[in-house]
Length: 299
Ligand code: FVH
Image 1: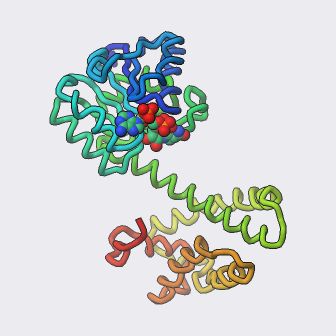
Image 2: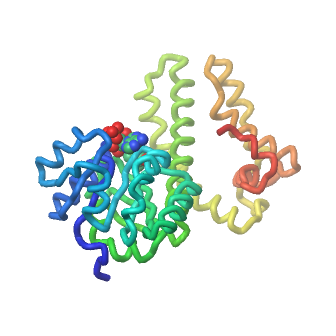
Image 3: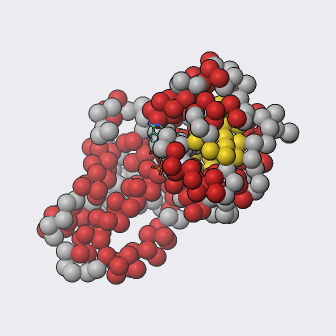
């Protein structure tokens, strides 16, 4: 599909990530206009051939494809509210991290101003942009996704998750939730080992192969969850998975048991509801969005 938005690109936001995105476009000889709230940050890119816009109005009217890579949802509105009326007919690809509902709000707001909206979630760090290791998820306008692939593919492997603008963000944040919880678990283990003088480096060397091997269990648990039958033989039961001894050991070593105690809460909840003989994957049921008792979970 040819790009009705032309080949030139405007990049708004020249932080670590926005600068990496703009640099990759310059490397691929795209005409690139850049804008940053603090204009000095455009100097390095200008030296490489980018055109710094002298105002946000000039930036969003320079090209019909506008990329936003700002801090958060509020900064997107703060930047574009004054000029959205001048963007009718343009495509806005927003790579700023937002919640799914914030992405949907931006899509609705953009549509009300005649702007096609594609949301993106970057699964990479700035140095990875333009390398095969980078991945970016997209959702929202399929027309913008198809038309701008030659630009998007300069940065990363591009995956389109559907027309619901919130989906890219949802997958991003769901994966980050898994990652941060895993890292918190690792740090808790390191603190336990550290309580007897074991260095974090030594603990990491011992924990990495074990934890890596354990991720093979994701697919098994996923199959159990999707079948909805936690009684399938061969699973480790919740009664067997009681973690109160790890909580106790952590306290005995003077280490805050918060990460493992949170898991124990989920286990205890299922055992209390009579599911102790069922498999560990049943914790999923403790976390389901439709559980009324979850509305007060920490924000
Ligand atoms: N860096 C990373 O590894 C991650 C990878 C995953 C995706 N994130 C998201 O990308 C967005 C930008 O991240 P960043 O790394 O470029 O962030 P900073 O270096 O802190 O730059 C922030 C830019 O946002 C501008 N900005 C902040 N507030 C406002 C505002 N109210 N109005 C206009 N612009 C604003 C800031 O401008 P300045 O401070 O230089 O004037 C920077 O250009 C982000 O959503 C990550 O979650 C990156």
